[in-house]
Amino acid sequence: MISLLLLSNKTQFNSMYIFVIIEVSMVTIGEKRMLNKKSLFMYFGIILISFSIVTFIGGTEPSTTMNEKETNEEERTIYNQRDFQSANILEISVFLDEIQLQLLKEFNIKYEKSHSGVNIRLNSYNKEQAYDKYKQASQVGAASDIMLLDNDWINEFAANGYLIQLDEIMNSMNIEYHNLLRHQTKWNGSDWAVPIDSDIYVWVWNPEQLEKKDVLKPDRLENLLEFMVLYPEKVYVDQNDPYSLLQIISMLNTSQKQRSSVESEHLKIQLDIISKLAAAENSWESIKNGDILFKLTTLKDFYNHGNDEFEYAPIYLETEFMNASPVGGGVIKGSSFVVSSNTKVQKEAFEWLQTLLLDSYYSKIFINNNRVDDIQLEVLKALKPNPNLPDQLSRFIQDLNQLNHEGQMNFLEQHSDLWTSQWMGYDQN
Image (cartoon, rainbow, N blue to C red; front, side, top):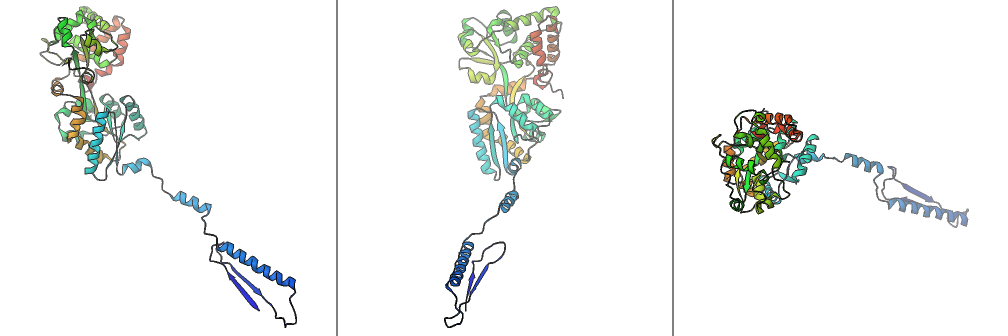
């Protein structure tokens, strides 16, 4: 008798091992019973089939079932992007020009090298889109940790709970420049932003054209007012800018004694001046060629569009009635850094702000770059609230109503909050 034992390779097949045992019994020729040829072929066929099965099973590699693959996918951790960022990423959003943005990138590289474990993600927007981006992100709790806001937006963001109070930073820094701007960044008695830059209103003229037309430089308010009464068409004021218009109204009311505008005919004079102010598609070109002799604009606008031939003076001018006190109520435009209330890296945000403010890059990015010179600081020191301004402008609107100047009245009413808030030097909170 011959016994054949066939053992397959160890393989997983329904968790069992396969043993193929084939026993073939053969009798010798001398035995009485002989296998016929048909039986012999049958035995050999069974042996071949058994070898084929063992070879197929033994050569198959272990495989992962579909259920196992799904289980592995389910066990994989899915991290919330904001939670992942909060561990070591400080996200900052700004609206800056290309030069400022590049300088800020350089500062961030320097900062990361000296602050291990902190990575900075910098987002840049156009100012026109920044407000909507910031507000939408703040509403869903996804705002950047630090944002650069126009000062016009601070009160709204603070009142809606989008910001963290920054009294700690402002009180610790005690920088004169910042302290002069704090009335713009306060709401409800607290600091909500760190002032970064500022902009004041100035009068601009071309001295060559003034000399040709024998017009005095506006050294005193009375000189400018006299010229505006006689030649309002030679004075340009952007009447789509509520700040500019409010500056003019304030200035026109400054040298007058407290009395009814309608009774004194003073209001009619003001309306006549405002209605005849110059309109120009390119006011800077008009200043250059003498079509316009005086332009009210901001200091930054002057530096961005003016040339070395032009001169400027702050919006406030010396007057015999006010003894060189500022005219216009102290309107200052500017931008500030804020910290989002949804930040998870408040400590890192505060440290970044404090480091920037004391670093030389701060001056490069936000001061020298905008060419805000020493006159800016002196003007900020001089600007104080005009105590009569709210009453003057309120009466002005009432008188406009009496004179049926609905268009002008509606525009002023639309922006009435500008002179009843800190923008005109008053912190009502």
